[in-house]
Amino acid sequence: MKSTLNHLLPSALALAVIATLPVGSVHAAGFVEDAKVTLGLRNYYFNRNYLNSTDPRIQGERQGQAEGWTQNFILDARSGFTEGTVGFGLDVLGLYSLKLDGNRGAANTQLMPIHDDGQAADQFGRTAVAAKAKLSKTELKVGEWFAVLPILRADDGRSLPQTFQGAQLTSNEIDGLTLYGGQFWKNSQRNDASREEMSFSGVEGDDFNFGGGEYRFNGNNTMVGVWHARLEDVYQQSYVQLTHSQAVGDWVLGANLGYVTGKEEGAAKAGNLDNKVYQGALTAKTGNNSFMVAYQKLSGDTKFMRIDGASGGTLVNDGFTNSYDNPEERSWQIRHDYNFAGLGIPGLTLMNRYVSGDNATINGRKNSEEWGRESELAYTIQEGNLKNLSIRWRNSDVRRDGTAQDIHENRLIINYPLSIL
Image (cartoon, rainbow, N blue to C red):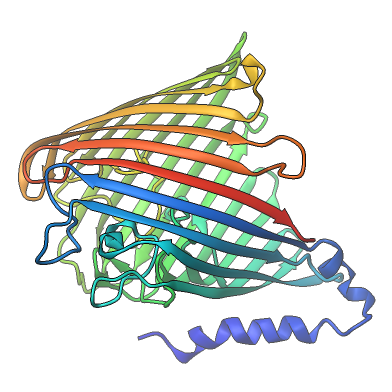
């Protein structure tokens, strides 16, 4: 169990920050002057058809579709830092989601919490508060926030973003080098108002501890990252990454290479674990076109290890609908992006990708194959009263061997950010 100190730290530090900010204090100037407050209005429609099966969360009835529609409000308020040797600040996320439509088939949309009777909640939300302190180029953050790290990525792919509760230290004292360290002890998933224990595949661990560093050099064109994380008594994981970009004539060539290894940790509550990932992605950009080819290979008896609900992005073949992260799976991807600014339509973009996987163990069946196709057409208004309003249409298909589910999916996402401060 977590100590009482873990749960008191966010509130205690928040109170300490507030106590340093008397009205009219010159030392609080940076706290207000550098503050940024935005209200994000997100309208999200989700429709998934199960072509050869049913929604796995609906028991005892035929349910070939998951569908839902929500209106969401995301208030993101971030203060600056107070003046002085040590600066203090406060970040607040106010999250609220309202169901516009969604029946018993809404369970697998993951837009809203689902009640015991299978019905989607009419509304949900939560507030995340994090206090921060800064000394020189080192920052301490304690509380709850939308954390994005290579070994722990909060998911923002539905109505509301996932958040984690914990503490993180980030240091940039050495030019080009960023060091990270910390601990998270609570998880608020994207469709949940509660704060649960950190877990992997439904197995609860203790704290999630992490440390890492990223070094950028060669004119910031090359980055080497090294990370290690432990979900106490469940798993441990290490990740090494190399990225590089290089201009060659009218082209910009890039590479993203990575190696991940994971195994059980401590009491091994999830049993013996064994997973390794070798991966690489090569990109080429010219004018308004961008191309990518990627390869990802898993080995060992365990799927890729990530905290429940966490986002993809670490693996090069992570997508909207699938991650190709089954035991022993090999997958490759080809992707093309086009910016229609080249045709005189700034703000309009199109992405298409195809991923194919084989040699996978899916639902206990070895040597399984799967493939997926994903497209995104997006437009952001460039001027006028609705400037920065964006509309995204995502269309996807996934096909798998055996009893695994084949799906056809559409998502329509409208975002309108309002700058309040």
